[in-house]
Length: 275
Image (cartoon, rainbow, N blue to C red; front, side, top):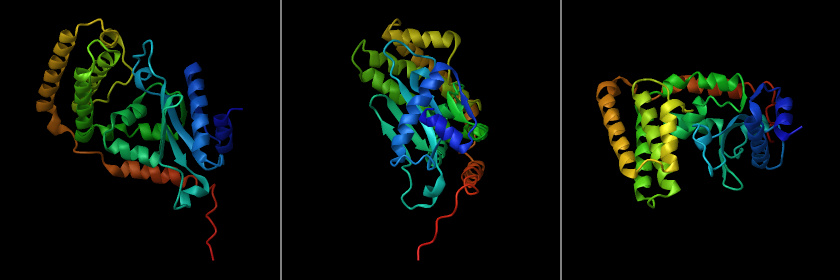
């Protein structure tokens, strides 16, 4: 058995693993969860969700795309009670870009409207996840359709336009940044109208972004698309923004975390007090 399969069997996890990409995802996360534990005690860290993020999640892969992964793990076992518990995040860039967040940290980033963590919550490419725990967290996504999240998506889009304009003419980075800026603006348009972002793109819009990534559309035309898209977004903001909640109600997420962490208490003896 692979490490993650052993981890699943040990905790009676219900896993949903899809196709070859899912199996590859499982292998990658098994390796890094093992590193995260330090001593390799499989009772201390539990993988909650993992997927291949970036262009793969958005259905925008092209030749030369990076292999990026993102996931969520939970501290469990005796380490839940330690002052120095497992790290709250883990990142590496070798040999792949891998980012793991402890579930409490992950929920905190959801509250800040971070597009990367919200995309993980909403992706339909569920390559490795524990259910029903992850499904329960996903069901809380309507609380994230608020002014904080909208502002973050818009800010991320603006920053990518800035990077694209500063990048070398005709470079791969320039076209990639333009495409992701337009994607983020499109997702911001959904959020400001109270709809969830579409993570995996399809149809004509996806084909348009792929053309931009290949450099098939002249830069002045791309700039025209940026201008038209931001004008549409500004118009929607004027009519819909005030109807959005200011921020997410923390109580359902706190209840989720309390219930999820509490589920380990019946399986984990309290540490013996020191004399």
